[in-house]
Amino acid sequence: LTILLPAYNERDRIGSTLSTYVECMKQMPVYQHPGDCNSTTGSVSILVIDDGSSDGTAEFVNSISWMDTATVNDNVRCITLPHNEGKGGAIERDVTTTVRSLVLVADADGSGDISCVNDMIQALEDLLVQSSATRISQSTPTSTHQSTHAPQALIVGFRQYPQSKSLLRSLLSWGFRTAVSSIFIGANLGISDTQCGLKLMTSSTGVLLYNKLNLRRWSHDVEVIHRARLLNVPVGECGVPWIDKDGSKLMTSVGSALTVSLVMLKDIAGIRLHYALGLWRVR
Image (cartoon, rainbow, N blue to C red; front, side, top):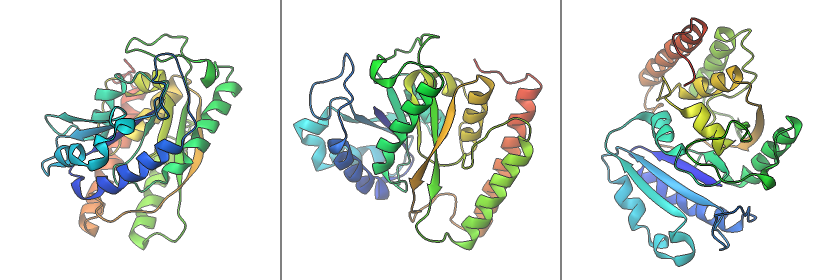
């Protein structure tokens, strides 16, 4: 399992996220595959993708004391992109480099409870079995040149809040989900929470769905799921305990939240139109 953590100006939040993730990583069952290390954490790694940050995010990650421990150092890495490309662009850049069989896309702020990863892996394995695909335990690490026979499946998290969200978040979330359902009516996205930051997939699926995205920022999740449906990639859902963290770049004010929402509405309408007209294709 490779955990991808795209991060843009997350110096103040990513430390606690990584500490939590590393502790969880140490407790994960070992999913051994040929080519993985034989250490306790050898089959699980974290890759922080510093997406052109200007606040020293990469320097902070590389300076964290636990990075020096022998059991973790080889399995936690940070790379830096020269320019900000958006979350989708950052994932696209590095999903092809993973040598492990599974990829978990996560958020740098740690809003999603990473302890749910075992449930997500089980859901993915069940989905592969249901679709008559090869079981995870029998798959092998994939390269940048994916086999057409490699197992394909995607699990999308849906956020479960232990307490009520703010009124603004609730309204925006409802509005976006309603817009997606309306715009993609008949397209069978079949996903209740396209914007959940936790998504688990086989590495071959990651390469297939994130290759040359047309949208690389806020709305890329919808394009990824739409591509999965167009390509008949099995898609499932799994509940994720969720607590919104302070410091959101989308919720700085009512005005900025509404502006972002309008941009996303335009984006998702563009996704449906461009793919329907054949102007965009999965490449």
